[in-house]
Amino acid sequence: FEPYLGISLGGWSPYGNLNLLGKHPEFGWYLGTVSKNIFINGYLGFRSMGSEKMYTTEYKGKLYESYHFFGGKFAGNLGFFLYNTLNRKYFIYGDFAIEGFDAFDEDKDAPDRKVKSIHGLSNGVGIGIRQYIGNIMYFGVRISHSWNRYDNKGGTNLDGNSINLMFD
Image 1 (cartoon, rainbow, N blue to C red):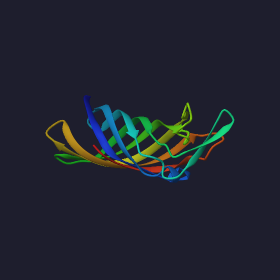
Image 2 (cartoon, rainbow, N blue to C red; image 1 turned 90 degrees about the vertical axis):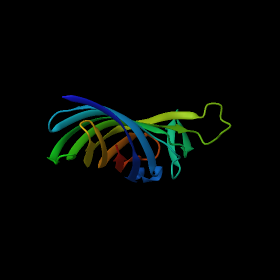
Image 3 (tube, helix red, strand yellow; image 1 turned 60 degrees about the vertical axis):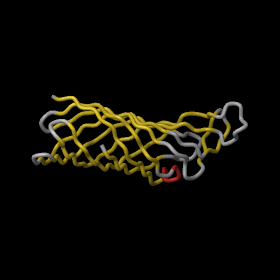
């Protein structure tokens, strides 16, 4: 097994009930290990920019409305290389993640604007390509589909799906 680490840049595009949050850029780091045809890694990523539409959340019996969105994702990935050429590898992968974001009251004069953190689980599948430069350095692109389930009891239903396009 050989260890590796890197950064990812890309975008998160939700649909279904999650569509109201809008598209967000994503930046993250990963650390993993690879053998001949299998790779395993951990990923920590962040998403920013405001929500496209207002959503509501319930906290201590009161409803709050927000456009705020700053989120994070901690994922574990397992992938398999399907086809290899001299410097290029094609792969499929699956992931399981804990995701979340903070909701703030839109009333900027409120003494404590942070209402609560909304979090949930997601799982996904994807495909990708790695173009190697030397033995360990590579540039890659991957696209994945995720099923997201955010816990926002009493507020807007935030269950939905998303597409991620990431560059490594």
